[in-house]
Image 1: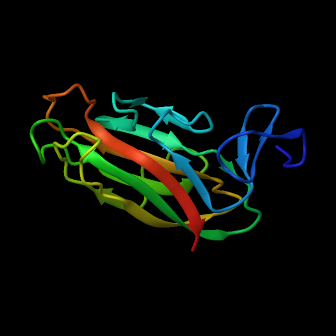
Image 2 (image 1 turned 120 degrees about the horizontal axis):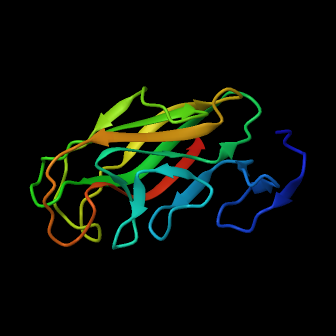
Image 3 (image 1 turned 30 degrees about the vertical axis):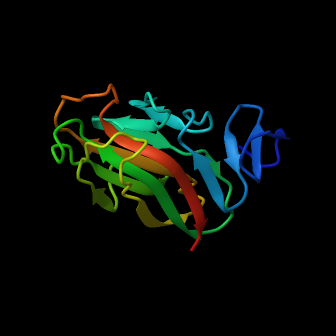
Length: 175
């Protein structure tokens, strides 16, 4: 895709966002921030994720992933990636220990710096968060951010919340 080809403005919560006619969302500036508490953002690609009963995005147990929109950053750019989240492990606290990999990539990446969280049994409205901060480099060969979550644990839960990685927000800033 040529950046200037068929680009139109997109009304959304992010500054500096454009969209081409093929519906690829292209982020043209930083900082970037997206709320993950009301809906699955339409500019992201999700696999095995859903909106749970309290409105947060949940990466479900076993494996789940998300791929950000394209960042149109013309040269290597060092960024700080921040995911505000926690691992909901159902009623048996500590049984779910997901590994979370956040990487700069054009597709879902299962390798890179991994953070392992310990599952909690608090519900999304009151649970302590375990934010994940990662340094990344966006480039012409890595224009998106991949979030990959793997892990399993207890399948017993009270309250109806889907077990997995519960997320509130995601952001990228210059490093």
